[in-house]
Image (cartoon, rainbow, N blue to C red; front, side, top):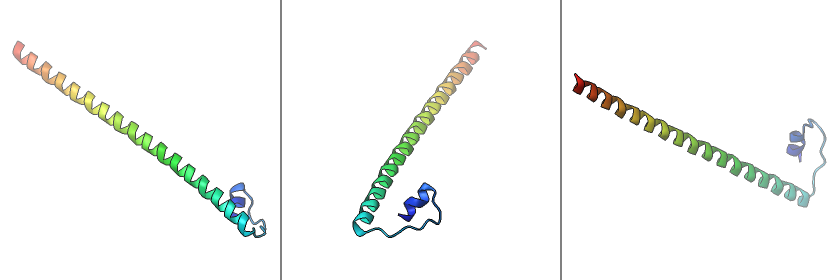
Length: 81
């Protein structure tokens, strides 16, 4: 309950102790919310990592294509000379 009050912005407010049932219910609710936020954060991180990997792969392919084109251009210039 103290953690919940701190999250709501109440500092130093006296909180009377909860009974066992209410405390268990509140703890289960907080644990459930923490799990949901954790899974959501993990999904966001994995999606970011996937997008970054795709961008890196695309850049590498473009670099390889550019390198091949330059080599072909140099070879053609040498043939013309």
